[in-house]
Image 1 (cartoon, rainbow, N blue to C red):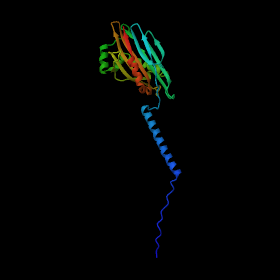
Image 2 (image 1 turned 90 degrees about the horizontal axis):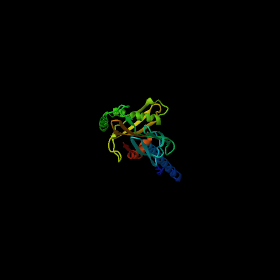
Image 3 (image 1 turned 30 degrees about the vertical axis):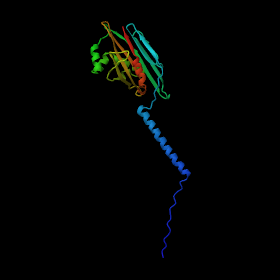
Image 4 (image 1 turned 45 degrees about the vertical axis):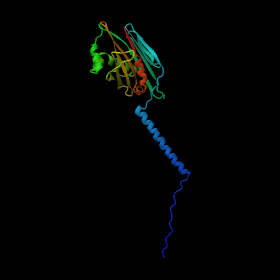
Amino acid sequence: MSVTPPNKQIAKPSQGPARHWINIGIILLICVAVIVAVLVTGRNTKNPSGNSTYTYSSLVDSKLQGTRTSMEFLRPKVFSLSSSDSTLLKSSYVHSGKSNQGNQAVLGSIVGYAPHYIIDENPTIDLSAVRNSFNNASDYQNYAKQAYITSFLSDEMNTSYFAGTNGSNTSVSLSQPKTITTNNLATDTWQFPFTATNSGKPNVKVQGEVVFHLGKDTSVYNGYDYLMISTVDYNWQPNQSIWQQIVNSLKITDK
């Protein structure tokens, strides 16, 4: 006679307190890893090189006073005067510091320049052609050269960012001009975004804008006014509100 053995249940491992805390620990580690990955991705999306930015605080007045024109604008207080030429009516302000986290160099340059070219000594350009070109963004690169904008930017980039390199390797790229008006400037004022690089310093890329204003034109001289604002590229976008305050404060008076 066969005997059917009794049903036996296989015993399961004990799910004691130790195993419970191990599971919680694993979950916490996964959560931390996900959070770190999100933070790193977000930082690198905003700033691919992982560099930090500088936070500017107070703004102070800057003024260039000449016999034919004057220029006034605000600048962050940390930008100190590096050079000034009363004959050319030009003042350069620079800032060299560390980012908020103190792990990255942050450079910046602001230049006010309001020369008045004597017609007998310098080639003149057709101001109506300049207006038409800039207002319609047609052949603006050519007229930017004629109005000395390109050479002005190249010189400033070599002085402030690419010192010690071959200046001929500096490349300045101007974007299309945009007509701007402020409370102080109603006509003949354009904003040129630009970038600059030099193959001798491949890790440095500059971003900024130059405000170009056609000053008073007479039979004796032509007035061209420039305000350049620039900084290393990873510091440009986060400080847009500061740069805009500077542009809005610009005041030019021709005599």
